[in-house]
Length: 404
Picture (cartoon, rainbow, N blue to C red):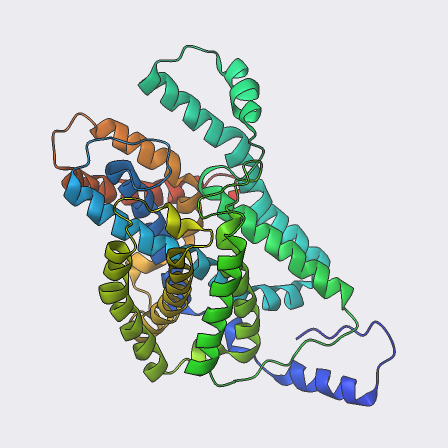
């Protein structure tokens, strides 16, 4: 670790910094299973938005509106479970590498790197790609004839949008949290960072307490802003943010303590089985007894037992699935073959471009008279291949290596 002494320090502090400098953090090495998790989550995001296209179970640009009961049920379960954990896990593993990168590069270079890697794609997507995508979609499907230079300022910004539209809300969130991290490190730059060392992964009681606290904060927040509420200028759904912020903070701590590597098989299996039981028993009970089939608004927020139940269930599922995915990939996917070596470097760009790709694929296939789930499977195969294939071509363009 790079040691920076800003003010005269005591001998004990200097000794601690020297000891920390001798530690070779395992988190600084290439963790192949984490790379593979990024690919998995990227593909899951693509499938998530495709499922919304065909099942209508969420917010998206294009809906085919041909879903039957089976498609709606499958789509609802698939998108609901994804929503509970996959973006939180993205933030968790992203945060894991923030401290090491900050300490290797220093505040200035790290900040510049994050602004380039996150800020440029965020701006290009928000102000060019997404407006063009919506505009082209409206011309093709709705038949509008308004020129783009009139549509963009009046309809796009006129509706309250500013930045972070579409899937790039995640990149915006990661950038905001990273900027806060840099600000805190600079504010407390005289305090030495905690040495990196192997620490035992938290036990069941500590993990459960964490899930309970996140659930309570989420429930209280949703008394005022229910699930689904969106701060339109930044396209941020704050009702989900207690879990997002908490998992980001856990990622920062996990780096210092090598938790991704000290997670035991016993803990991983236990939380996987726990999640399976919650999904098999708790989810159907909530749907049936809570009256979700008739009115799901009581689950989304307010003084309702369903909202409290849903906050707790979502929190425990999010924590358990994050632990379970980390365990499974470290246990069974801590390697890379030829396919993985192609997918890993292209995952970030595939995430950025996937919205226009899957909308184009869905529109191209809309004339096929297939069952929605069969069409989803076909569109998934084509879309995932196109996203990663186009990503590899985009990354060969001049200067893209500095951003993507």
